[in-house]
Length: 86
Image (tube, rainbow, N blue to C red; front, side):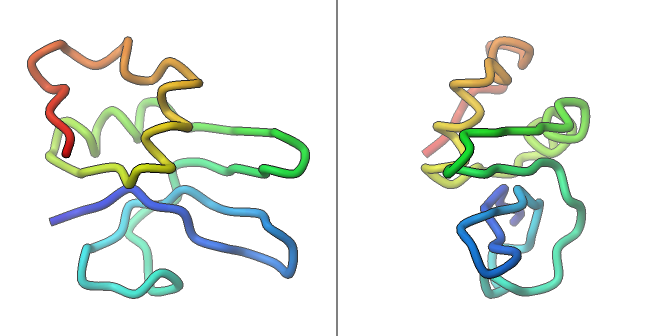
């Protein structure tokens, strides 16, 4: 099973949003980088096509990543029957 989660990079609180296997640790090897999030500067970059691909394949976003996606409006582009997150 895949998750879309935050992966810390650098010394400051800067994160990449990655698609990663559930069994991997937070800093483990990711399958693909799908975004970037900087909470200090409040900057977000999202590769929406890659995110939609992984969501349609059944990847589950973590709570924080799901909040980032909601703010960016990613779920509006997803088909209504695909929105099943726990």
